[in-house]
Length: 368
Image (cartoon, rainbow, N blue to C red):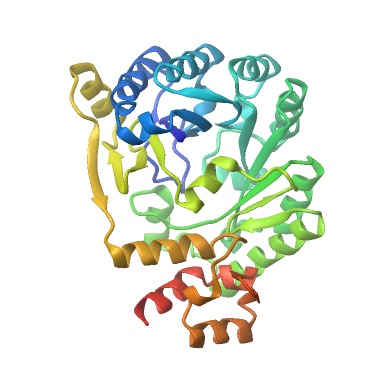
């Protein structure tokens, strides 16, 4: 069983962000812990949780989970032990902003049980960070990484955003180079997308920002792929590359179609073949847990065709790939010919060029 917690609190909303967040000067830790553990007490009664109560991964996502102190994290992990067992080798990940990481906080997180941190670097360019409305400065990244390592947290993933507007004059190769200089065990790559109701969407609508052309997007993605592979990383999923032995176990569970519980506002769960999601806003979520109401916002059960599409998409987004027979022969031959896929006797997997076309390739196969 895998557990995800959405920690919605942020000091500021980034210009591209459409996640369910709550901007707060002070994080309401006590109220958050109480609300999440209240939801957990209800979730742990689900047959899937009772059948397999070993938690092998726990992921604190956000929002900005690094706004939680070690006492809150310890209280949550202790609370999850009521109705489940935390595996001795469990991967416990905390998403963090560089400016939240101090030696004292890193040591506290490690004592609480955190053994992996995903650090939201996004860029090493100060102008880009200001444009993104990020709260940290480039010079805070290296000390944050050092503090985490000194605290004994060795598994460190660094997040980067590519395909930024060309007017920012961002040097993508420099960002990759500086990231590798920090010797992370994992790197995540996210192409900038314009989401509705964000500052970026408003800037784009007014013509102040122009999304990069597709060929520019592809060039930066392939540059990152080549750079990371040449540095010894396995590019094992569309957006993720890792040193051998350091793949993200929690996210890999999603891509395998494993069951998971999501706690907190807007969190998703997948249990017993049903995908469900919680109400989006923190205030609504907190009020419902306090009054004993359900926090579920909706659910869906996939039909056979939807399952087929899901399995194709999940299989092709990683280097595990699919059994070749899962893809029609004509499509398979076309992918191989174009260099979008490679095949072994029992495996068909996409190349980096293929991952750039993942949505279109899966859609074409689903419609055939």
